[in-house]
Length: 335
Image (tube, rainbow, N blue to C red; front, side, top):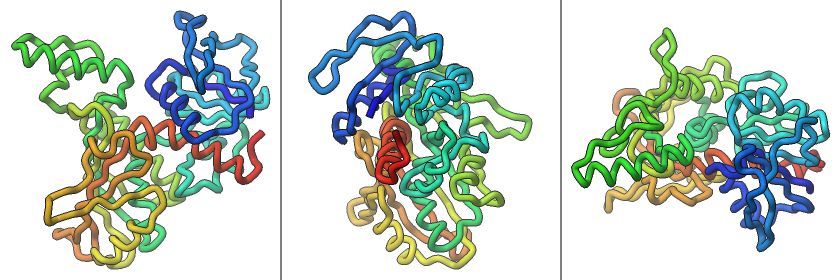
């Protein structure tokens, strides 16, 4: 399989390389594309050195599958051109998620949607993936009708610059220095703030709107009601989310727990005796989304409350994209 990674030097691009090696993805040739300033540098993969290249002007990446994670504007310009040259583009940006031509796919939930691709497949937003890994199996069992979600989103969602900002500000503040603002509008060290995305006239920001609209598309539930509050927190890696969910049928805690214990890609961490539940530190570097605090919602009969944590860079981004490619390979729909 001829593989290309667009945005190979970014946090998600580096995770792609690690995952492709870990999962022994069948690669015959690997082409790594980055910005012009990075072109010519080398990256090691499976013990071999690979040179970073600038994107070709003709749009031919000489690839069967392209993992794209270099920003929405670049994807809007080039994704379909790459596809016209014979590649299946699995796009990790927000550019094509709501485009009817592009399936929006989480393999454990709606992998079959990927088969109908027209050249571009969209990877959902990280907070959407992490929430739906828990909500989708419950939806299949009981019919999800409404959910309220509060997210606690790590700085990894803002890339390498976000990670560096948290580290640098933490060091400065512990030394009594004024934190320097570069990536974020507000200090992130020892602080939290509403997600740093544009707020619409309805008062919801872009991240919150993504969670609603993408969930409806993935679950094929156009009337699904979701209200989200997305917050950036001083955590390096892995997003957490508090979820309260209502269903078409009354659901008991025991029923919800049984469904989640058997859900693919989910690991239940729910030990009340030791007060041990999903945490971003424990979720970091893990393929599975951790689910716990499973309980009856005291404000609504038959509703369920739970808490989830998932690695934003891994399952929330690179892993999901690689799993899409693997799914297509098993269905002989790739290459």
